[in-house]
Length: 372
Image: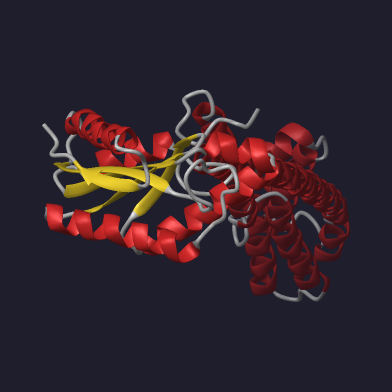
């Protein structure tokens, strides 16, 4: 049993589903890529936006620089001005060092700040030798150095975490993209497969319909094809010719059915050639043929009947069982009508009536009857 055609409502939902799933998969892939891009970009911005700001390790580094500058000044100080410059450097170091983050997380911060204040005060009051003050400031330098190293470690940890997180997201993006792409490709392949199956089923149905409209023995149209052609030529002036083979049963009895089938094929070819390319020939069953052709007048129809009779005489097919003659003869009835859905029945009756009159008169002839 062939598959349903594309218009079949049982087929359409599945066809749409495969196509929709394929498109949704590729759209999902794009959404995933956009999401990952939007996740990574803010993370990078948040990390690198700190560049140039005085936080964490940078504050400690600058504070340590000012303390060491004060130490250098104190080691060579010989005048109040040089001591004053050292005090100024200590004030700057104190301002950079005195932040809540250092106070909360590093125990050496508060004692070091107190030491800076004490040394600065003693230097102003000349209660301490500059070289002794310089040596005492190594405690502060040591504290700031530990803060720097810890901040560097934390910064490295943040960088490692960021790198690891980015790597994981890249893996998720890669594998998810691959999975979604494969699924989308699979859905698309299923869609194409379904489409090919539908096209194949449609072609099979059309081929079956074409075979259903043809006579398998002679290859010409059958009774269904005749009715279809009449309906499709609505309003045209047409001629209908009915043809019977005279004494065909006796022919089959004398020569056998294979020879009878051969005669049917020969007659079909001969009638088509005799009536010309504008005529359509049909086998209605057994030894009965019909022809449909454009026919503007009864005279044209008569000419076609005469041409058919002449072609048959020229062919001279032998009929050893014919009671009167030794060749095949035909009985032909014809009529002309204006093609409509209801007029064909009357036209067929008129042509059949003409055919009956030819048979009653002894066969081997033709007659035209006016359609009612």
